[in-house]
Length: 367
Length: 146
Image 1 (cartoon, rainbow over the protein chains, first blue to last red):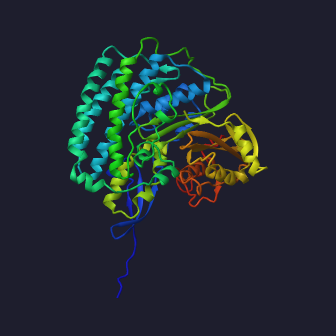
Image 2 (tube, each protein chain N blue to C red):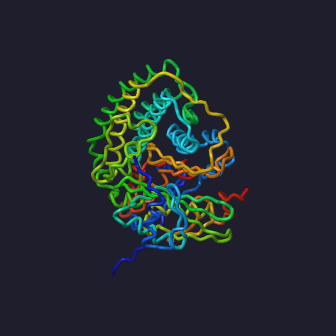
Image 3 (tube, chains in turn brown, orange):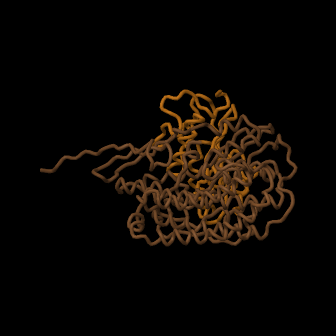
């Protein structure tokens, strides 16, 4: 006689250490295998797009800090670029270099947390992430020097940056850039050929190239699936056209590739910072822009390669002091679209890893 | 550099196949009628000349008289982009066609616009609240919502 079985619904989250914020996965299980999955979110929705409509163009910058709070500098940059495009504002050279340095440092900081949290999910509880937090701390110290903040920097301004870096910043950055490659080598020694990591992540949660493009995935998730698409190269913004760097891409699109792409991107970011430090000119860091900006009637979309993917701002101006509409294209939200396809057929323990390998930030998904 | 295609040029190509679809083209924008949005999007995606395989972003703007939906399309192969727009009228039940069948990346974004702007996407397989809770009254991103 055949045994009658029933599927079982399991809620993972919203309060769960492996969901990286208030996120819920409603999984339907057949035994231990996931047969259906629905991502549920919105617990952190603050209506930032609506709040932006009530503030001046400059007043929106602190709100962008609170999107992806692990990459505030990148959010600042994406927003100010959109306003500058809308209002036709030029940025001094030194400010462009400072922006690139900050954005690349931020990428390293965000990827450190991404990789560390991913290993946490794999079961290497707390040891690897503490190594990575050690290095992230040094980046936070650098950001503290320039902005006085450790998480929500509010450093970029329309037309430049809020203030020049202090004298001790560039020597400290130089020290960091010299030391960091050694630390990345250390991670590689510990992890890249670690048998447990390989067994848990190789071939797990494969996202095919076609599906990755169709679901609008971006950033390391898209590149791990073998698509050589990086906005810094494909549509260079700011002064990225001046730097030499490579776009690491994965072969298979599994969890290991996503991990590997992030580690390689840290190396490339260091390369960019080194070049920027060599070329940085002296001079003003902010052009003459009034506090109250009234861009002409029109629309502008500006996008950057944020640590988690393509971060874009779509601004509509009606020639008033506040944006008529401010839409945020959040990479974390769109990278989640394929979560169901990646997880179906895998066990609960694998689902945690697959989810961790996407690297999401709830502040950005719910907005 | 991603080359933004001229709205005029693309509109001419679209008009060859769908004579009544385009209502306006200016700058980098092509404004199409909402009833032909799906066909036009399908054409832009499948024709080798445009090959818009990547849907960058969808958003909607409330202009009181109408809602304007904005679709940003990118071709990873040709590295060019286009902004496709459409409008829907009325505030009680404005309806747009869903393009989830073409680009699955539209799934969450259409649900979000449905929540916040109150436009229904016809043909969406799972149009339920995503950022608001079940039974939330009103649509926060509308200009008359306070």
